[in-house]
Length: 491
Image (cartoon, rainbow, N blue to C red; front, side, top):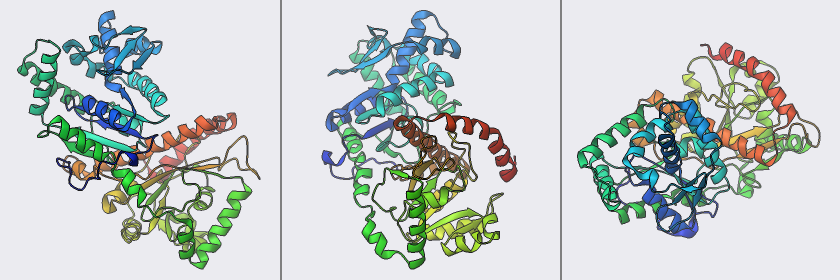
């Protein structure tokens, strides 16, 4: 449900937002993303990065150089070696292209009319995303623009989809152009924004869409002050909910049944023996009532990831074949695992899993469905989206690395690590249901989970670079695991 008033949003206490927060703002052209992003950056003392200005800068450079906005190869070549900088300013952000201030030149109707075509090219977007991630991964930023929450920063602290009616957006853009002394009519703006909406929503690469975990704010009937206040308070929703999470290890330990104590003791011993490193949830138990969504690289993943949970009960969806092998079958039943048939839809398994989540218990799943090549997470199957839509249970993306090349005490060739992402809550689900069918929503949830894996992997590689062993093994596995994926799931 889109927010139009601050009802039920947290009070505006700026100290609640972490200093390294990332705020991602998306929405259609003319919805006020840039204005609100600047206001939030000032309020929370964060760095404002105008990603739309990055594409406008390339568009302006292309028009000046006579490059066709539909020529992706030439645009990518123009961007490849360009120096694109942002400099702080009390007014609009100062954008510098190869040493030249282009801040005014990128705000013309000609640039506005061509920027959607320029930004639609996959190679252009890939280059821009890399630049944005470099600028923002250190945290403490506000970013606005296309696919910031779904692709660039899938693990953002707060995601806001800022919506407004076409009529309201035309009026806002008309006032902006008047203030800049530009001669344009409302009719021209209406046609331009309607065309922008169509291009942004229908293009194959990074179309305009609501991220499943975004808070939707409809500002059609709000003035700027009201819009900024609601967005600011929306930024505090996840930090406020995080404060309520029960991750106390002592409480979790007291709740453990004897067989879970034994299982976690064995798993913990394995983790210590192989030198497992835990990142993102150190010293804490798994939060209650969540889907722990783990990538899958080896058969050692379940016990090694399980060593980090410390929470009873955690039910695990495991392939039915494992339950037919002794002693694995009895063991999996002993720790409350749920057998699932991977080909087709196993209604019984999903019903059991959904019932456990609805009762506040945890569920561990490997949503890729089978093992994937090292360094190449995904694709995520539809099962995750089915569970999310049935229960709306929060998801914790978890990335495991190094379970293939284990060595006592740890391996320099294959660092063993379990890295937790933040809790992902499905704020945008209600709005998505008004626009999309269940299958498409499943796809968007799956895409977000896969993007989270890639971000966690990138953070891991940034701290401990990917080794030659991991690269070589991953390359060899690609063909093998692609064939296995086809055998298991068909197609």
